[in-house]
Image (tube, rainbow, N blue to C red; front, side, top):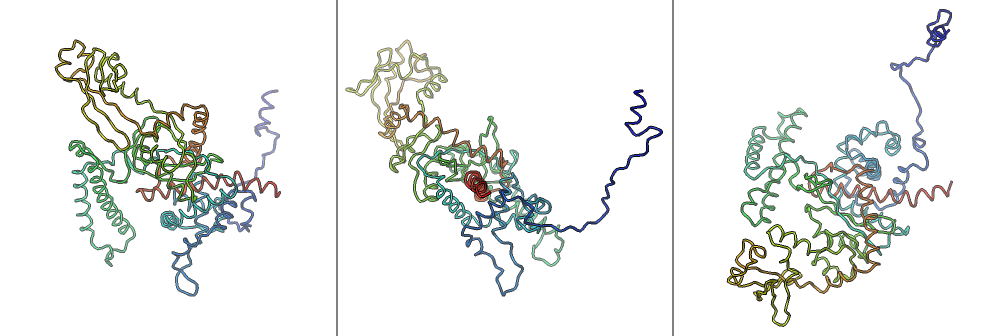
Length: 506
């Protein structure tokens, strides 16, 4: 019984007629009508991007178009279309011009934007990097829209940096001698290939090869220039010899990324308004350290919105005396952690072999004589002072004869003839900051930092997939970061303003 049922179910029974299925004919040609306007639904985000960009002043983008009415030349693509394409592409984790060009062939949203036309990837790639000032202006105009909608007030701004990998490999970094050798070979190769304008060179492949060789020569020359700049910063001659630059992206720097990984990258500095997590400032730095990035961040926010933030909330990498003093001059309140320099000093002393009983806290300061007394009763006298940028360092030292005669020399100053101490006088602004951060209200504000400052970082890296830049060079990397941040702000406008209005209208 079961065997007969199985045969019937599989269509192999003797009395069962053969099944009939609809065939797939992939050789046929079809002619269809396409209603472009109905390719995407009414609440699709691509419509919101098109609407928002169309209401902005794009005259700076149009000013560079050479094709004019009544004149010769092929019509140019409308900048509004190209801007909308790139903004929507970045919001969908697409950063390749070739991929974007292919999406225009079959993806409904991209087809809707272009009216079923396909845009060459060279046009898309060139447009992305050709309008830096105009893009800055567009970023500010979108910020003005968000501010008008009540999403920005600058009462509290969170600032943080995130490392994004450069379009360069670890093995592309070379020292000066190797760079000079490769540059010599590249120049020789260019000379051998002849004049690029020669009539003999007609083949597109040959022209592409020539262009690649010339670009390599330019990158090597730029790498040597960057190497010289980095060597100027290094005071030690041995360290100067070890400095390396990338032959792929000379302006990239090796930085520490997530999970302790070291790789070529750039430091993207993002300022986020706390009210609706809108990005109000973006910059790109070659420095792996955030210490000098706070003041430029404040200046970018002020340039974008015409006013400085009232309060900046940052992590410990931005807290130093110079920043605190400068922010006090600008009347901007700083909220952040209190850095315990004592623990850092203790770690250094332990590394040198100094016992805990002879740490600086164990030495007694006498204000009247301006000197110290060590735990063994020896005197440390005043030796002088050293001025730093925003602090004053007072140096004290014991007499070598006293330390040699002391039975605790091995625990107090191992490897040194005499024990010395440094007393640092902090600026008044630093003392005020420490007192403020001891209050409960300041601690509560600081607890909100990560939820706001790291929100756009996660959005850009996870949703937009911008973990590695597509472009090379500091100027172009900044443009790419600006495209991503502009797309992020428009996504927030769609989420918080446009969609709710669409729902009400329906």
